[in-house]
Amino acid sequence: MKAGIFGSVYRVEKQTLVKRLFEKLTAMEARIFVDRDFYAFLGDAWGFSPVVDGILEGDVFDLDLAISVGGDGTFLKTAARINKQGIPILGINTGRLGFLADVGSHELDDTLDEIFKNYYRTEERILLKLHTQERLFAGYNYALNEIAVLKRDTSSMITIHAHVDDDFLASYQADGLIVATPTGSTAYSMSVNGPIIVPQSNSLVISPIAPHSLNVRPLVIPDTSVITLKIESRNDHILVALDGHSEVIPSGILITISKADYTARIIKRHNQTFYKTLRDKLMWGADVR
Image (tube, rainbow, N blue to C red; front, top):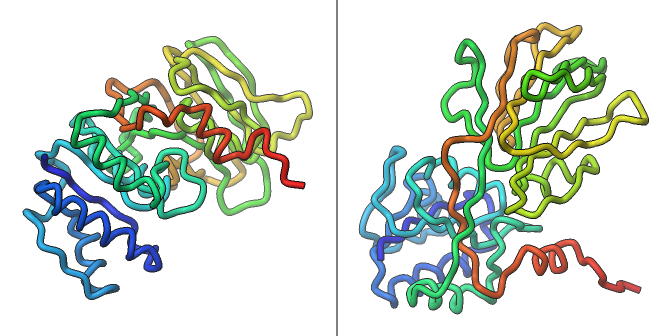
């Protein structure tokens, strides 16, 4: 099995877990490939230079498995690197909450054993695609979690005129607007009181950020919908963020958001369900008294 490792370059205190990962993969006779930046970090920060079969550069990989070591942010970056190649991604959590990177240190050995025995499942997760008439967003223009339109450099609200499938929805006066996938419903959208959506629900959610109206609420729509947004701002520019990666673009530009033409494949253990994740990560039903 050819395993590619992509990792966070910030969690120095997690070196024991990372070293265990390399030891386990070596013991299982996997062919190990490591992202160039992560490999350089291991040597520079820890003095750790494991023997590997190759260094991953560019955006085309010949892998059977991608392993993301970090938090959900690292997982999103890994998914962006994998892009349309269909390589299944395993998220090993060295961060905090971890909805995407949900394999903890105590599960590492058992999880890899199951994967090498082909005893696991993959979930297909939809992504969003951003389109503008002129290519204003540099590079990768897809998002696994959400696309957010945000005000920039001013305390004044922006006005976002939203249409769904050419049908006028509303003009939001707010700090911004989030369009999230079911995967992203437990991320930025949840932090602004958007609903949590089961990953297989074939839905999207539109969540305003600090709207200047008490009767504006998040809205769930079919994932076949095409959303168009036109933004008015006192500032000449706004921010558009795809999974946290933001670009400054001129206000007044027409933005189109739709479901991407491919999915991300996420590896899950058979006993790791979405409802179990909600109970564990959000402590649903837990009595902390």
